[in-house]
Image (cartoon, rainbow, N blue to C red; front, side):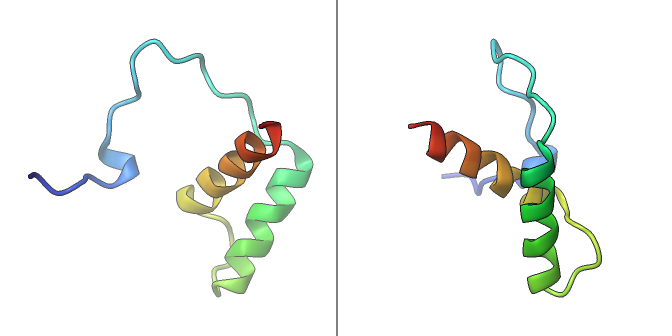
Length: 59
C-alpha cells in the first residue's frame, strides 16, 4: 500500500463544491490552536482542523 500524501500535495476531490471561507470564530480557534503549538500563525493543518469542527458540529 502506498503511503498517504500530505494534504498540500493531494488534488482536490472531483465534484466537490468550493469551500466557504472560515468564519471569525473559526479563525480565532485556528489561531488559538497554533499558539498552543508554539506557532505564530495558523497553518494549513490548523485551518483544516477548524473546518472539521464546523462539519462535526453540523451533524
